[in-house]
Length: 314
Image 1 (cartoon, rainbow, N blue to C red):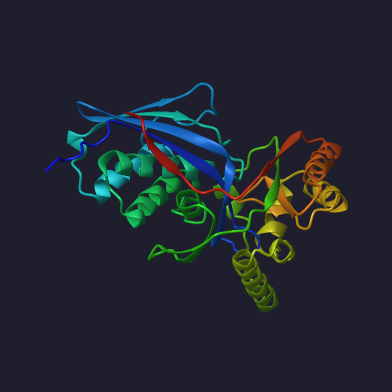
Image 2 (tube, one colour; image 1 turned 180 degrees about the vertical axis):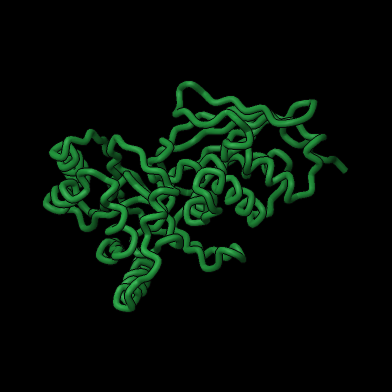
């Protein structure tokens, strides 16, 4: 009987995600196909984890106790009971998702670290990979959220049914185009969370339940207009838009250009719209809206993504 040897090197591509998608605060997440983080992991002889960050990407911490990729990798080993003193890894990260953008930057690195090590060692338990990624994400955001790491790991549209039990609902979304606009400002997730109201009126709670149901149904039915109509939020967006200078102006311009919706991705400052036509015009309108407020920005058009992928290097 022939035993396959484990690969010595793995490359992971981990895509951006949009958490709090519409009315699903801390619950809904959508994977998009761009931008991506790229992580290469090589198994070496020796002990410990070495981390290198490419100068061609965005800057992130080099300390393995502060980088979400290395923390997630180490947590994955711990969850599987691997002796950290007997494993040596070299990690090389090219950070393609801007930190503090609202596009799941820290989650992408965390997922790449957990999935990469799991793939390197032939470990396949997705719940443990998810758990390890959430631990890595917590280094950046303060708490182990699943609304970014879930869509990054699984792809498509995800609903966190139970954080404690890691119970995730996975739905394949329609092939819709998402117009994303990223202004040149950084918002810290922890700071943005502090603005969320501790108490919500019953009327608001009812509205969110209705909209959330519409989003889920629209995703399953492939009804883009229904999804767009239900991408509303009266909890997080009103509290957080004050951090995004030019939000109202960009929203007005986007809707005037034909956007069917306008909301904040994650903690922001990235904003996005759904539309069935005129995507380029809507993106340019968003940039114009921010420019009128004295804020530089750029837009891109994304599609739903398939989640993080690990490839053998040798």
